[in-house]
Image (cartoon, rainbow, N blue to C red; front, side):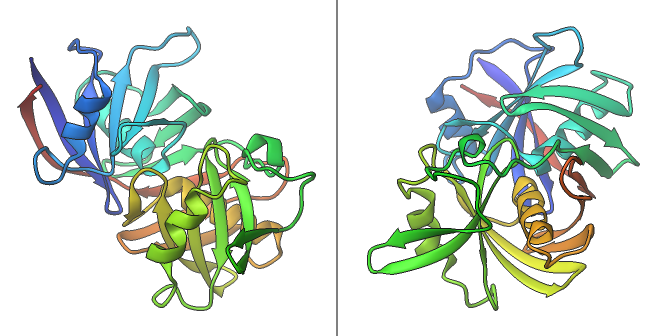
Length: 276
């Protein structure tokens, strides 16, 4: 079949967005991999699928597939692109859009044509919610990697994140440590790995090794997780600018009992069709 798509990105985190409201298709794992392939397909970090809601209190269902074909719970940069997509494709005229994801309900607020604010819900620190194999919640956790031990923070933003504080992200061993932490047995569903450099209480630099993808130019949930973890440790203020390789995001978290708010840009790259 011929499938219409839109290529988008949020701070360099790039997506193929598929409208399954106005067109019908059952995407298989091999289809996702083909769409995401940067040599033989369109190329992206994640494939985002817009579907009709399965419950009456939301506007859409939002599904996220990593480049390896696996479905994941959440993607913050993708959520912003999702909001712009459904408005520009006239699937809704709302500026406040409620969507269901595998990680829970999120609310998208369109600020202008390119900037979207996302209510990402509360960060979750309990090991069972991440999930993480640990007896109880702790400020950090020690991971054994052969003879090496790493101290990491652990947060769920609807998907699991491990955060390593580093002195300099330019020299951080993202390619070496990223996959080893991602597949560590203490994270039974694998984990996204963030390498965070604190510049001051209102600014951090961040690189993220995403599970099933590798290092990406930006990760919205990773930025939320890093700021939440940093604020919980007393390193960061309530509102933080996160500098990622592909751009910057503004993250606000006021502490326990509050939701994380993320604001950042969206961009349309091109539109087209592909034969599956």
